[in-house]
Image (cartoon, rainbow, N blue to C red; front, side):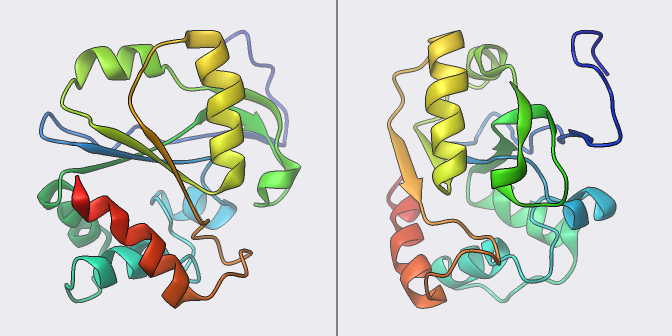
Length: 171
């Protein structure tokens, strides 16, 4: 862990991105949930709707195995990462995030130049990207699309989330 970020029992560290040279859509969450961190899987909480939404919009069977989910991302030219590299947080709620440190997007965008759009999974991811990444790293002109959160804490009906998220198939 970096020297500039003091560790505590509340310190959370995100995952490396799932991305390759063919990726065109970068989907950003805030920070993995406690269950995702425990499983070492993006959107690992069984009630998170992320993988169900992707299955619905791409009209493919829901994959139970994480490697199959990751394969779907690559097949559909999707990349997944989080806005934050580190933070302090008690529990899994975005509202509990403190001492947020963003990931190195300058490096990511320099390496993966086929990206066409940034999709932000929920208001907190959007806010953190706008205020912690763009103001500090000022690095991209890619369009940014705010999507409803796939979190089990979000109250929008799944059918409406699927409708809104289906926009990513346009890219």
